[in-house]
Image (cartoon, helix red, strand yellow):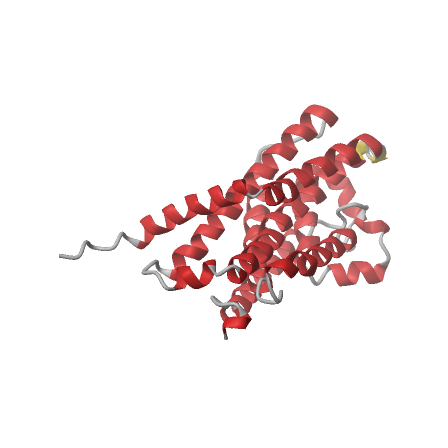
Length: 267
C-alpha cells in the first residue's frame, strides 16, 4: 500500500530548510548578499559620518538606504541569480518531475528571503548602533519598519523570480542582474541624499520600488523635520505602501507569465 504524501505545509517547511542550507553553503551568495551591505555600512560610516542638519549624521541617513539595498539584494538579486542557476544546472527540471507541490518550491524561496533579510537587518542595526551611535526605531516606528520590510521584500522577491527568466543561463545571471541593482541603488537615495540627485534621476527612481523602500525607512530613522527634504516635502507613507503593493501585483503577474522550469536549451 502506497504511503500518503506529506502535506503541502510540511513539504514547504522542509523545502524552506533546504533553501536556507543551500544559501549558506554558497560562499559567494553569503558574502555578497549578507556581508556586502555590512561592509558598506562600516566603510561609509567611517568615512562620511558628518552632520546633514538637525543633529543627524549621514550614517543615520545612510542606514535607511543600506537596509533597503539589503532587502533588494536578498530578494531581487538573490532570487534572480539563484533561480537562473538552478534552471541552468537542471535542478528546476528535476524538481518539476517530483510529486512535490510546485508551490512548496516558491514558499521555500520566500522563507529563505525573509530569513536572510531579517539577518541582514539585525546585523546592520547592531553595527550601526554599536559603532556609529545610530538611533534605533521606537514604538510605532517599528510597525512602519515591519510593513515596509515585508512589502518591499515581497515586491523584490517576486521581481527577482521574474527576472530569473531574463538571463540566458546561470553563468550570465550575475552579469545581467547586478548592474540593474547597482544603478537602482545609485539613483534611489542609497549612497547619496535623495534630494541632492538630479530631478531626472529622481523621476526614474520613483518608478521602481527601491526608492520607496528607502523613503519609507527614512521615516523610521530620521526626524520629521527632514521630511521637508523629500520631493513631496513629506514621507508619503500611504504612497509608499501603494507603490510597493502595486509592484507586488506586477511582480506576481510577471512571474506567472515568464517563469520556466526548464532551460531554454531544453525547449
